Length: 70
Image (cartoon, rainbow, N blue to C red; front, side):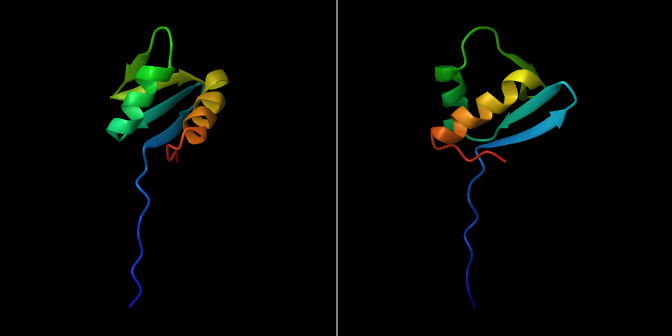
């Protein structure tokens, strides 16, 4: 029987209209945000809340630095 390995998801993104929620599931993801996101950060229900106009660039930066984003 073959075994499968599931990739650890660091960040789960949910689109909520004009706001996207970035659920930072790992310490690696939380550290990345602390080091790379400047200015004010807002959280809603434990997730980083991001305006839609910044969400794609944020996700691409995370992916570019090796985080697994879904």
